Image (cartoon, rainbow, N blue to C red; front, side):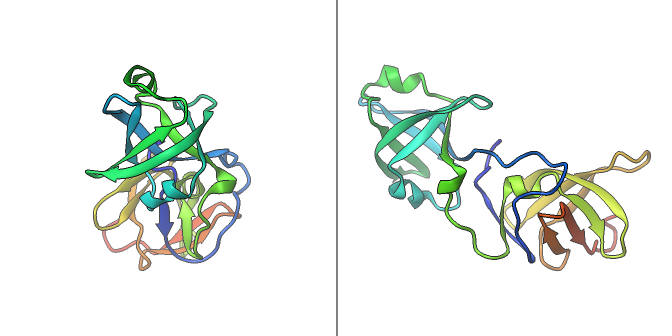
Length: 194
């Protein structure tokens, strides 16, 4: 899942997950290997974290294909280059070895995540929340987050016949409350949203 480590700025409240929701992940994705840089095994990584300098705080990263258990690697060095992170992993010393990691996720254990400020959420905390209006109408469940330049947009699906996909701008005037423990997002839809 791309941008799993993305931080979301909104409303009040934090928690570790609601009932009936998927368990918290063991790892957060901070990058994806998109290529190789040079002949000494440096990985070219698409940055999927809000703070690319966080790589400088890490001694190790976990690397693996999406959906599989990642493998720990010593992080021997990093630098930023043309909008990407270049990572040097201990033991990955040539281009051929680095090529075997193309497409793999760069992850950190959840317990090593940068602490969030109040009102910030990880993507996995928002996905799966039930969406309710301030007046108590159920609108659906957040199934996707779209990242636009201006603000994020939550995509909610409702299984009720006749209901459609609802796009909810993730701004304070619309999202009134995020209650991760209760598994709900309370919104005040702007005119024309429903």
